[in-house]
Image 1 (spheres, rainbow, N blue to C red):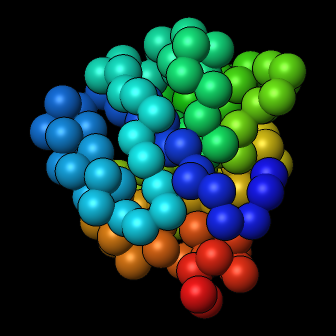
Image 2 (image 1 turned 120 degrees about the horizontal axis):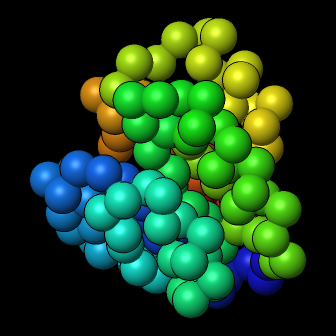
Length: 130
């Protein structure tokens, strides 16, 4: 990834309300653009293949074991994006499981804005500091 280029973020989440709110937030982030959305996390692989995002926000859903398997499938794709796992209920155990499955971090939806800002700063420190 090159410094200074626009980063593409895709969202795969089962909640239409959350997808809409997150998409509006991302659209306003300098240096980032919305690559695409799906309102069913199960369609995440297709979204990644069709939109080639730099970052995928992936809802682990009500069945985290299935969400973690989906995360592994996304990370196994050629030119896989960085994956930020999302959940309603953040815990240290869930964060460790997400990272073990290949996520760059776990984002609790209740702290979406601050959490995403922190994760993006970790992924692209020179761009956030600018």
